[in-house]
Length: 366
Figure (cartoon, rainbow, N blue to C red):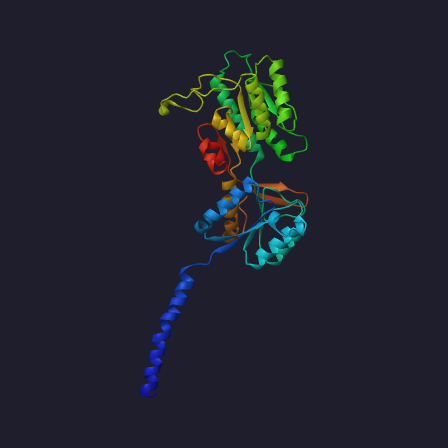
């Protein structure tokens, strides 16, 4: 090799080696974000607005890129189911590795067929499809919701109205909600699962299956009148029913008055209430129910924690990619098979921690 050709070869190596190494270290040093597709039937509902916020805020932390499909905002010339399939197809072509879907209906076979073509696992969120098994399902445990409402109401009753004699009982109203609502039915089952453990202490004096705040108000008003105000608690299967109950309690001047001990160290839960009234408990932590807790007119709600539920779905998606299985807590039968279920966290909301709902209902604190 001539001297000039050797010099040219050395020059070539020196010029292109750093570029090559830079490319190697850039590709290997930083992994591409994993694309996760999320499709919801209506993102305008506050619950799903908050879920979207949770996913977008935490995407970098989890090393993912969220592709979001709001079916309601799609092509209005298409029916919702067609819009859903169209949006899912777009996300699959964009390279998503897992699909999280709150489906338009209980039937998602067209969506699942598309996902299978791309070998993409499907996680359903809140609404469980019944026509074909998905990889896994994320939801709250409705029985736990009802159970938490009942348990916490009873703990307050123990503090406010300790039973002095064996024959003494707390008179309790349970508002069960409309017939045919499966979610409310399971919440009510959770309520009674707890109440049944206190059969010696609790007498359920009314347990109507009512629909809406107006019907709840009417029922609670009549029951309070029938028992001359001798009602210690109203446990409602939803925030909406709780609103009607609270109005009836207020009308009869039986609302509790918070009088906290001024020393925070001595303030333990509800032990320092000065004027006691009817214990009101609901499920759902709806906006108006939370407003009433903040105002001191309602005692507690059980919150379904949508922000954390979205993160539970994301964590399940990443678990599938890593372990090739769904991290289940339970199995649910859908007729055509069984689906693995992961339950998301819940919490009890009271005057003590109502500020934690600011993320969901910021304007109630203004």
